[in-house]
Length: 208
Image (cartoon, rainbow, N blue to C red; front, side):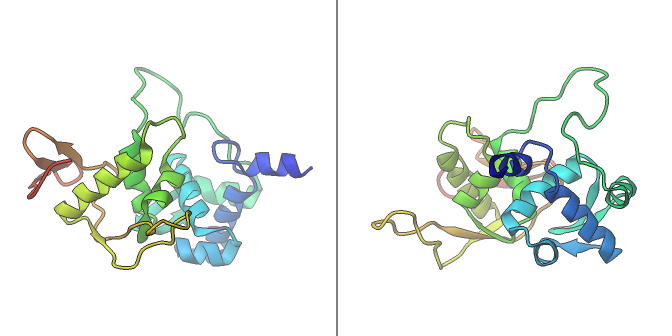
């Protein structure tokens, strides 16, 4: 029984009843809720809400109206009222060439839209699939790039480490989030291109 319950709540499966709890909370609110308000209404941890909201947005059951704030779509409202299951699978029929799945940095960038403050382990938990090589180092480099470009700011207080000799994990605060597409580094030009705003930002200092 316990094993079956864990499987039903595991990321990448049917996400029921957890996803349905989020839809119902939004439906009861009759408007928008933040991730913190959803956590209070459902008892689901904020990190898990961020994970599920990303997938509910992709499935078009909810929509992001502002950074970290969501509301049900018409489809989400119908599902919340009907008590249906949020199923896995493609968002729409496959009619042509498949797009490449989003990479680690893109998934981490989208997770940042849901978390005002975060550490590398937070992003690894939300964005990594477990198959990427050196995911932590990759995201550490990416955060340093975003910091130099003014998207995030490093905080003074560190998150406690997992080892007795650890100095802890750096924490960051999101300063701006311009859209769903992750800014891309050009090593050769030492610039960061933001596909959401079509802005190219020159990076000072070293390179990643």
